[in-house]
Length: 218
Image (tube, rainbow, N blue to C red; front, side, top):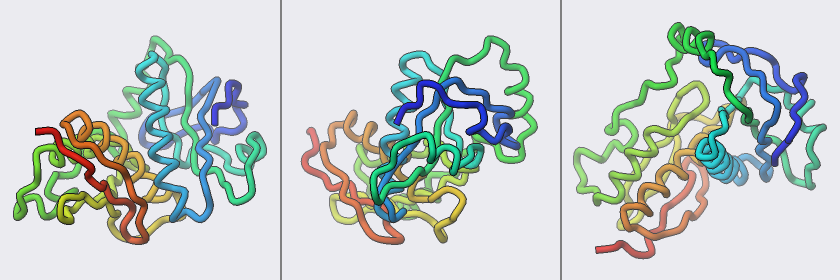
């Protein structure tokens, strides 16, 4: 959901350790189904599509996992029964002078550009023969953003399909399933570009979804 005018009081102010202070004239509000097991991954998937499209249009945007006031934000949108607010994304024009942001990123304890090794994302990658399209998908999913840069998504082969799951336990801070939804979009964009058509099938914990292959271009 787009808020063309996002009141300043919906943001807590500072995103400590990563980007500095967020001031945004507009915002995307991610609304999805409750419970989390059903709504979080689709919310992340759609939200990242909005982020990528905004970026393509020359707008500045970023995910805000804990830097917004959930009760205040919920009052700004109309929720249907069984819906909830998952998170928000800032949207606007970036200032010409980004020196403060660069300093904040340089001194961050959690670096947004650090990526975990492929063998951690796909543990069987050293022992199984992964098709080229699947490797392309994992490579792009590896670049996906996540809360606190935790990168919880894990991929495994099951026959001709690829299953996405998350590591460890769920959190109350930002759902790991939401992070996985972001990675799912990255994965899909890459595999479709590599000639693999398919659809996502949602799964139960600790799995998130299955990329069910329909066809692969030869």
